[in-house]
Amino acid sequence: MTQPRVLLAHGFLSSFELNWRDTGFVDLLGDTGRTVIPFDFPGHGTADKPHDPEAYADLPSHIEAALPPDEVVDAVGFSMGAVQLLHLATRRPERFRRLVLSGIGENVFRSHDASRVADAIESGEEPDDDGTAKFFVQSSKIPGNDPLALAACMRRMHAALTEDDLARVKLPVLVVLGDKDFAGPADRLMSALPDARLVTLRNTEHFATPRSFGFIDAALDFLAAEA
Image 1 (cartoon, rainbow, N blue to C red):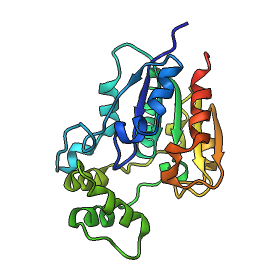
Image 2: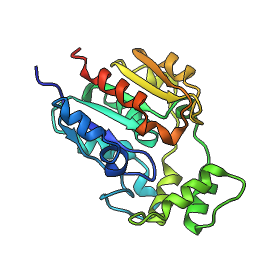
Image 3: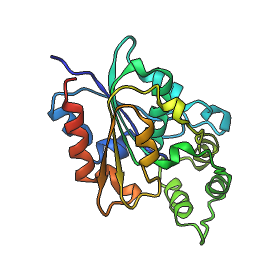
Image 4: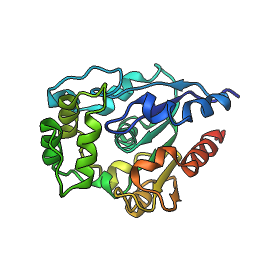
């Protein structure tokens, strides 16, 4: 039986190449016979990098546009990618067979004001009192990144989900979350998803998740299931 193709959705400030190829995940999927669908969100990687925040108002639609027509796929997401996959799955659950969602938890229920971080990315000034914002500013300056595009994305990517939304995602879902990840805990998310299981990575913070052997092993095992 031929297994479905796999779409990989990266995190904020990252790309398909950085999040998935450089970590070896693409090659490992290939070793198992899986075909990968490469994808970059607007503002990232090889995608267009508009500076208007409205261009980022519906990131799930960009994932949907990358899906092969009339084909059910598996999908793996990290952080922003995982949240946007979950948004799309609430709208179009029939497009997915299985989902692996990493680096998300309680944060999917929050629609927070990201203007302070976006302002810092735009200005290039690193705040001394916010380690995460400081990391985002530093990462936005990596060659190939466009800080103005990333700031615009940051301003519009934080729509919240509800328990009623998640009740529509009846397909099998694997949630992978580090025990030191600021996106957690995952209790509310696990209670809301009809068919989900949780893998907790010990001594793992948010940005270490994509390179964690625990994440990689759990994701590959979950995707290998035929049902």
